Length: 220
Image (cartoon, rainbow, N blue to C red; front, side, top):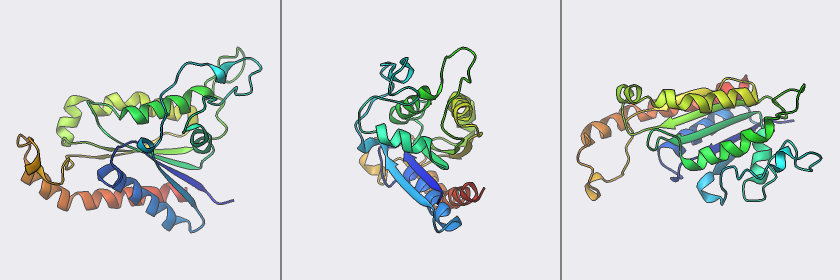
């Protein structure tokens, strides 16, 4: 059976920094295994919310016990991701956090697999899944550390590892270009020329790293 790789874009932009990193990850997966099945999804194309606390996934004797039973446009995707071999999540940083769309998706993904039956395993995910997080941001690495973005991401990484059994791989992409044309926006507080130079020289290296990550995670 071919390996299944899911690419989950939590950015509203389908072809910009985060999306390009995820595309590179997908390309690396395809290069590693010609038979691999790669599915790329943009969460902003789908209508859904975070967990609604309906508790269908915890209902005694319920048909949806152990999986999200709320019927919307990610119900099938949640099932498929939980049965994948590799999943890459991508998000820009908004106000020190991943996007609301990705956070809501992760709530729905994790919670059904955490059970509270006394004397039984707390985690009932259907399989162990290798995961990666590709995170883009508008600030440099020093500012990122000072602002604690990496620390704020830890609960997301820890819950993903707890539920799916593998420590997530993480790639940070710093000081990205927000706009294609900075002259159109009030954004002259940024060092625009510095950003353009970094994008020209560093971003291709970031894409290469993402491609290598997709390759190595598919072959491992």
